[in-house]
Length: 289
Image (cartoon, rainbow, N blue to C red; front, top):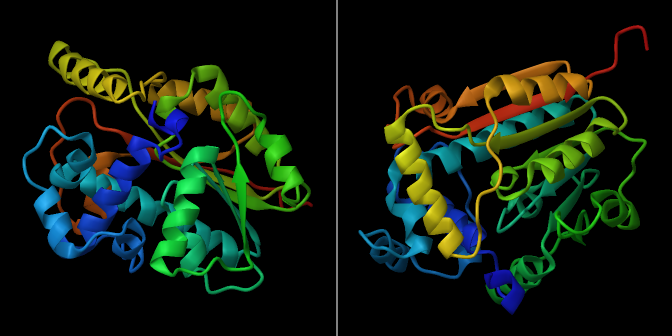
């Protein structure tokens, strides 16, 4: 796996390329990120050359417009949730599997703490990229190196100054399907134990329902496994809702990728196979608090 050799996650890179290419290729934009191209360290011309038919895994997210638009839409969906939480007084944001996310560097609030949690190798590479791009690390940001499969999230976050007794919003994009079901559930359980109100925004994959969709799903899983980042978890909408309700989450907003994109573009996008979904779940104190 690429990360074991001291490099970044291939999927984190692929997502970053897609987010950066969205900035120059798609109009109207769903998600505006003025740091995406700069942090990646490529020019607009290089990005355009990359987004041509290729078998290279890094370019796949850029050339595949439906997937690229979904990456933009899930980021917008998450940051809209963060903005609403901030308006309600939340002052802690945790970005799980942060990759090359740039929210912390665009955050204008000096009282909002942002915790970026990621695999140590990906995080080290990102810090090098930030330095090369001349992007300052704000005082409001804390890096938290954690391997979700082998290290407890609680230990990493709390040793970094995260306050378990204060409300928080968790952003967890492009990660769940690379974890075992047990590891994913353990993270949701940890989030559910946070002081209320607490929210989590994440995306997940559903098991395919038809033979054709299963073939597409297997082909993509094989490609990712070949890149050293196999898929482990699929959930039905009923299963994920049941898990969240059992953990005490009361508000669940769950969208398929085409519906999420359509909400921002007033159009739709066609996906091969079962499209991914993005979900926002909340635990809110009763008014009688």
